[in-house]
Length: 241
Image (cartoon, rainbow, N blue to C red):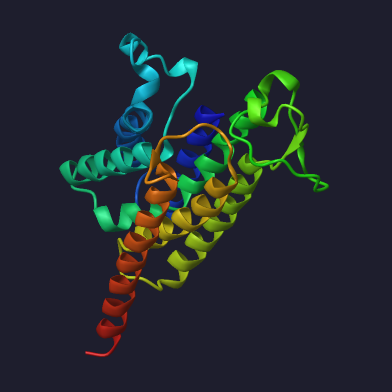
């Protein structure tokens, strides 16, 4: 599902870049580096934030087929490498960022369906009409008597699709300075991940009794707000010299 999400995102990104006057192969040249480094970043984030589970089995760190990819790490390293490659190839980094950013939540939305196939990373017990039924062997010990749970993967997938559409619309309307659309994405991802993470009941590393990814979501929200505020203010200033 992650691979499918990447392929769909690259296809849409190429279309968006062509609409901006670029060439589809330029996106391919960027993604051939950004995607594998994003995978590495996702794994490193998981290992760093859940290092206790690797004690005594550090040889399993590269074994991504056993599960364990942290989206924040993948996004950070993947975007950083992608921007670096674009600079080296003389591609306008602000313009290409604005073309790429809306496609990222689409990749996330599709990739999240892997959680459904694996019956993992679901939320608290619920009897809502759209509750997710989890097999006995996949339930946490503290909730073994429960059978239906919040489908957090679905919540995050829907949120990301809506976020992608919002990002594309804002890009068309040119509401932000070129290259600042990334701030709106970071903000939107942080808000969505915050409430979804609060519903999850899987084991997670804690800081001050709070899940690590909740802290990361709060950091993302603040960072995104700053980028958007600065981008919007400069856009207004440019229209009123």
